[in-house]
Image (tube, rainbow, N blue to C red; front, side, top):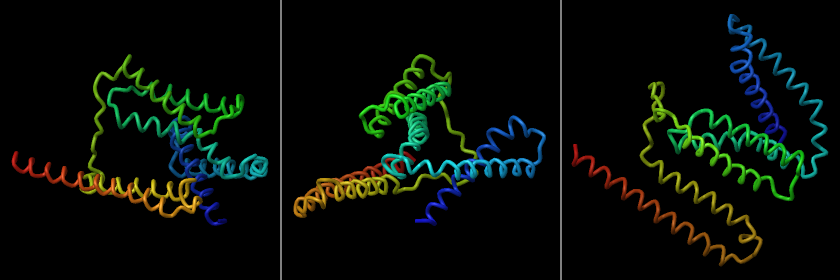
Length: 232
């Protein structure tokens, strides 16, 4: 446990220092600085962050629902809005960058008000889900009213191999099924009921559907291969 905590702490500290150097210090103050000077400033920033966290860490024991729950609530300030932007970015091509900035500001400010001021009797995950839907709607509306002049096209610079894996959809389906299986097993409908026959039936239905989906995906891919071969 101690090693896991240190690993997460070090990775977060290094990431914060890197982001500060690349996105804040270098563009504003370090235009004529050498890499060694920029790295040195990053170390100083990391030291400040580390000392700040050491002095503020004892306050976490006052979190009413424990450390893990507190970390999940704090993570909601950035992981959900970032996922929202990525989700819209992958599903649409005409939403402009300003939409992402407005959505990000809306999500963070609204989430902060809900968590720090209003504190409604609603679980933070439900709050994040509602704000996720609203943020998506905001970006889509902005994209409708003021779309990009040209659709966004991801430029492949051929730095790394990006050929899609042939079995990506089958693997993704199986991974989702495994996740759902764990959810069913450890939910109130799973082991706690001591109804192992019912649990087996639920898992059997889940994996039967998964197998059918995998078979369908494989057949569709094989059919596409044949069609492409005929066209060629």
